[in-house]
Length: 392
Image (cartoon, rainbow, N blue to C red; front, side, top):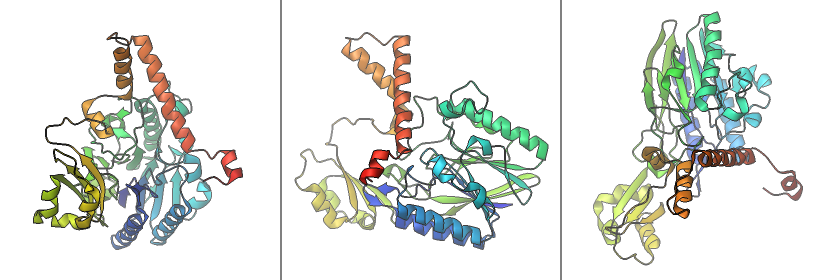
């Protein structure tokens, strides 16, 4: 079975206010050509098909066109929902669409029901919100490792009955993976991190959620996002993964480069040097993040920079010798500081150095987790008042 593994399309995403839909449409063109040229049997998208729970009409139209063209190649197309998708909306009419070769898995009920392609069982595990699916999965562990372990136990039980080689799609943060600044945090602190051993016994695990293509275990890989969505992805190779699995298991995995509509460049230095140095010529056609190190902030800096770098979209100032602040999600993960840690630090600060007690810390854990779930729930609802008033 020849399969293309991709994920994190984030259709409808913007890059510093500039819509990425044309770049995403170019990726769809590339993907259709790849599937047809390589005579691919299955195309899998491991979550975050859309960038938001309520995608815009042109975004929905692009997905409709993409899956139609991909199914027309003769390949089976398998989509699973990610933490950015509305599971209910993405899964609409899934039973009917399955008859045409488009298989959507967005609920717990479909976890142990594989799509069998050329003698290989493909299990699509959607993003699992622990507090919402733990009971349905029969586990008391309301954590990402707990619910994904329960889901994989159900998968392994079905594999044992079928006796087929298997591929598992999952949308999760697996230990050993390197995040970027463009993923949304999915839990408080480190309780989102899942060990690769959760996928033991699987011939290939096709992961989604992290936007950098990477291998975290022998047969456990992230395809990464096909389009860059933050400057932290500068220097990444955007790829799709061409995977071969047969009755003996995983045969090979090959990276196929995705098209890059516009590259990313990071520039740092004094304004006058950046404007004059010929070494920066390649950045003139790239999305550019500029960090100015002038001791005194230059007037009209962005306007002057755009005269040479018309696609400069972010300007930072770090005067020589000034300290820098760690603030991004990826940086927080590297420094092991969570939102709860920050809240506890603040509590201790305002109380004159009296640290938060265990009970107080638990209150903060519950509050931060409730806020995160409320935000996700708000993304997945359209208020009736908004519909009546015509609000977007």
